[in-house]
Amino acid sequence: MSSTVAIIIAVITAFGTTAGLGFVIIPWLRKLKFGQTILDIGPSWHKSKQGTPNMGGIMFAIGIIAATVVAMLSFTLSGGNPETPAGEAIKGRDLVSVISTLCLAFGCGVVGFTDDFIKIKKKRNEGLSAKQKTAGQLLVTVGYVLTLWLSHNTVWKIPFIGTINFEESVFKGVIFWLVSIFIIYGTVNSVNLTDGIDGLCSSVTATVAITFIIISSVMSFAGLGIVAGALLGGVLGFLCWNWNPAKTFMGDTGSLFLGGMVAALGFAIRCPLLLLPIGIVYVCETMSDIIQIGYFKLTHGKRIFKMAPIHHHFEMCGWKEKKICVIFSLVNAVGCAIAVALIYFGTK
Image 1 (cartoon, rainbow, N blue to C red):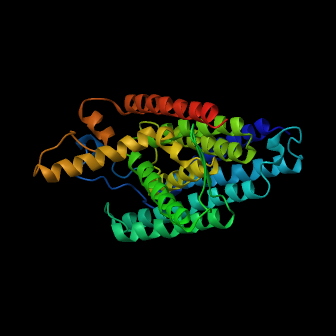
Image 2 (image 1 turned 60 degrees about the vertical axis):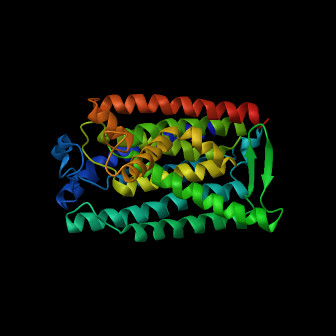
Image 3 (image 1 turned 30 degrees about the vertical axis):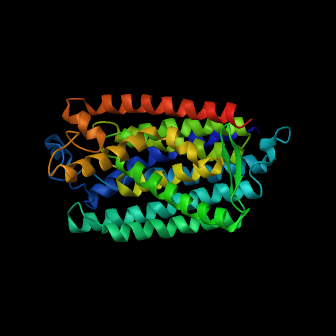
């Protein structure tokens, strides 16, 4: 079996599982009255979404993990494709990358699930405190970075510059830990911020998944392609239920799960710095929030954007949610194309 076939299996399995679970999980969430509480400070028209089942991210979390396992087993049991380097790509160190990717995503998803559950039980839009949420994310992040360190996945590729082995000295080792934790924590929360309107986080993440599938082909890394394929199928399957008007929201359960996957895939390609162009929309969402808060404090009440994160600014300007999803996804696709070019031409 070729790695391409394994990726297709992952996409189809994740899509079918996620979309199919919607018929079971959404009614179950509605029965449990696990509905979203809408903030008063948000756009007034969002009030119509009050009570929409939350925690729908459970659907694609199950779909992605199941699809990865099915595709990996199919690829391995078939003997892989021994004629290409990808035939050996899911063994040893790379197998650790695949497993740790799912573990980071799952761990972040658990933190999100806890936050969502508390919000729903208390019938308000406040779950874990900022300190509790940060502590949970950092605990999961440190565990993931430890697996990278113990498995010696500490060599980063810098396009047009070369490679850096962080195990060469104690100083580089400290830098590896600090920068890795910062990148993962930042990525996870940036993806979380992007989940603010129907279909936005899923559609943007679909472009990210396609990018990692392409990069997996360039780098002959079958394991990466399978995980990215599962991610693509999962978010597309979820879009069947989350496209405006949404029948369910992914909640922090889903957005933190996706954030963990995206971050881990960046480390799996040994080039986490490329997460900047690959997730350019995530970055813009976070920066708009930081700029808005900073400017508000400096000017004692003035704002640069009508509302932050930036997708709400465009909402306030009159853009429909579907238009924002399409435009933001196209913008992110441009960043993804730049990342692919950097990998292809800059790491040869």
